[in-house]
Image (tube, rainbow, N blue to C red):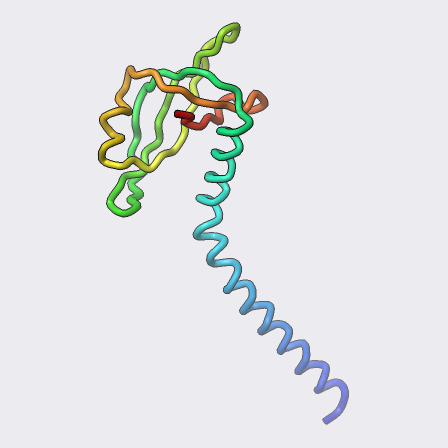
Length: 124
């Protein structure tokens, strides 16, 4: 076997390994990545965000279900002393007992990022 054939074989093996790694890592990252990043951002806001109160404007069903619990987008009007009110939203998977608490017109505590005020997290 000459060197050129051997090198072509190594290249093919390398491409196959790269394709397998892409599938093994890429599919879980595409499926679980957005939810993981949303969770991390929400945790960061809860620990580092600025406290405010928000009035619930509406709930929008995303159509996603997790263990039969619906994921909803909660649209809110955030108010903070010394600042004009602004609209924001966050996603939340609701347990059956939580749905009665999140009704339009109700005021809830939230935390937000001052550099991105439209990004809020529910902070009970």
